[in-house]
Length: 187
Image (cartoon, rainbow, N blue to C red; front, side, top):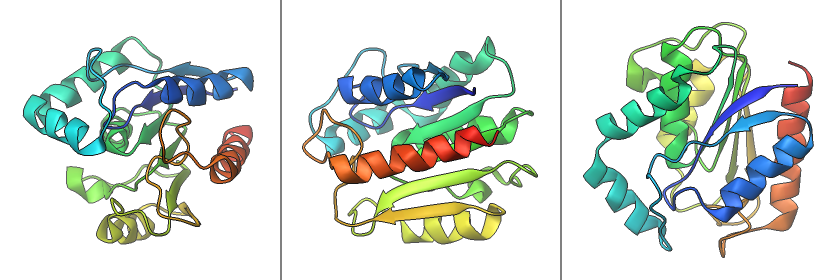
């Protein structure tokens, strides 16, 4: 079983993020869900994005690094939307990563002027018409992450696997979880 460090999206550490982590735990994995917003939650993605910008990438990155500090290095790094960046930052700066999976976004490893580690598999899960989807980041991820699996689901929901949001799509969420479990099973 895998040990996973999962970073939340811009709404904060919602009940839906906790439920997603709980499903991974139910499958036998150890899942850590640090709260980069220190208890703050938002109802609207734009408000969470504004809070993240106000807090600053450096501060949020330091919180992410602190969350990983006492954990082993052979982690699976996972992120949800905004959290994808912090998962990638750690994967690229801490040796020993086993895998990565991202919900609601892909990240260009070049943002850190780093190469993706050899033999570290990765998946992304997004809806095809998500208004927050960054096609340039998708293209860079596909080009710079050897063997990357990029899954697109029908629709335009952003947080489709978070059951605490209006975006929740149970069919897409179940398929994403199945694919993530397949990734974790081969580690």
